[in-house]
Figure 1 (cartoon, rainbow, N blue to C red):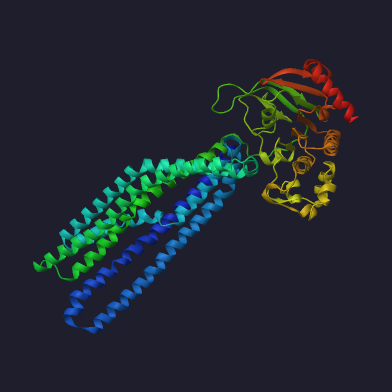
Figure 2: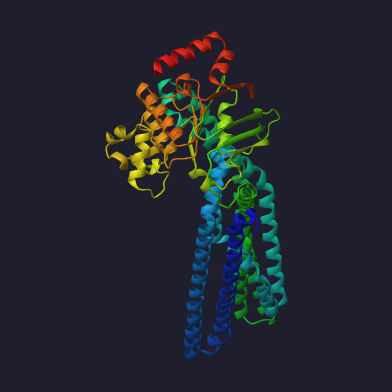
Length: 573
């Protein structure tokens, strides 16, 4: 079995379990609908036999039988609902973890919003299975049986029922056709409005400090008005057609009663058939009335299922599922080029270099040169367009993530922390001994700072550590990066928020990693952290402008940058 098959199994297994559960629910639903026929049969017997004969014993016997049947029907109906709840829970359990992992992978390419959409899709699919819409085809499949009973009572009863089913189906189709575009517009505008709201909340400090709230409020109000207009445009049509469907159903029941009365007057049927036909046609038309909402739920569920399937299969086509331990800390970048999805111009072109165990390479260059892009590619977040990046001979992108992640220490340009305790963040949420966590904190020079927090290592970091300063977050993130003695350490602007003490601790942590044989790649603008680098890589416009030992590269920078570098070296000394 290939790598892709290992990842696709959860989807196939979940679909197989779902099909079995829905089939079982359909079988139970058949008997639920079949037992419902006991009510019209009971009514016809009451009118045709009991009332005419005045036999109370027959009335009691029929009532007890029908009461027992309806108790049994209620139990079966509960069983069907419970069965669907269990199937929905198992579906969510089977797909939950694979979907969460695939959503995180997808966030690297499409952003956090796309990842959140994937998790909402899974919840929506679970709600669809557990809800009533999935039973709609089961109830509609019983329509031929009910129509047959109506035709057996009298062909005119069956004709009215057949016409009613056709009429409600046409109304449902009209609702779908006329409401599809307004509904899509409303969803699109609502997504934009939610994105604007989330963006404003994330930047609340800037908005409040610079007095931007009134203008943003007016902009948000315009977006809200456009969203509400789209909702109203589609809602008006949908509400009208829904009211028409309800009115048509009542009209059809009147038509059945009128038809039955006419047939009784002509002595073609007994009076009991009027009530029986009215109850049967009400039951038969019920799923057709709900077809308007149910059809849209089925369409949405099918779209959601395709998105989830594609998301899982896309991950299966890229990452390996076979853990391969990383042995030698040797990084090789071979003729690397990268073109972002949807763009034509490459961000990086034909980049090659290597880092041996214990070596440090610094990446410098102007803003927009592609330094952070190179760091993300090195840690395997994105797939190289051409060329490759290899650690111990294995592709950093295709490598199985758990085993590769254990050998990697990564400090991004924005060192975000996760909701959890300080200990959990440093330990990468593994069940690690506190001694290993403290060792990583000491290596990052953050042990004493953690001791001053309210609960030390057990201090909860709410809102991703928003209450910590930028330097504190960066130093805790550095401890997370060096935790577990990784073979490869990739640091992107690691000293951007550090003071002198923090920068000294950073230099010491890097030297400690090099001493135990780790390969170190540092992206930096401030030269102080790069003074002990073995080589420097100068990027300009996505290409290597200079690569070699520090003296050669600094000579290519010009007098001003060389002077700054020398001054930084003096300060560090």
